[in-house]
Length: 148
Image (cartoon, rainbow, N blue to C red):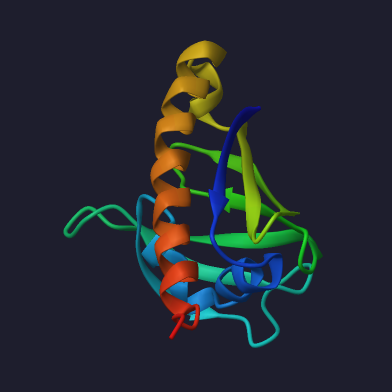
């Protein structure tokens, strides 16, 4: 699995608040262009976000499903973007001082993406997930109260 880590200035609960807002998914997930629907009890295990990947007119409608959810420390997702395939993303949040160490682990589990050699796949996923964590940090840090 590709592993990417970043310190985000906010508590694990603040990070999970953003992750638990399914409508924010396309704001921090690289490649997700829009969210079409979110299960009312997202991110309970088994719930889904219906999203689109790509840019018009080449949009692919697909879903992301929660595999495990342990607020505020773990969110594990089954992500789909067919025809390229399916994968697993594990996001863990660990308090570190006044911030949170957020780690994203990701790998393909089905489909043509598995044909990409692992070192190349890991490099591409790391670059993508660095940007995803940067965007997640912006959302978390923007929601924090400012010091007087």
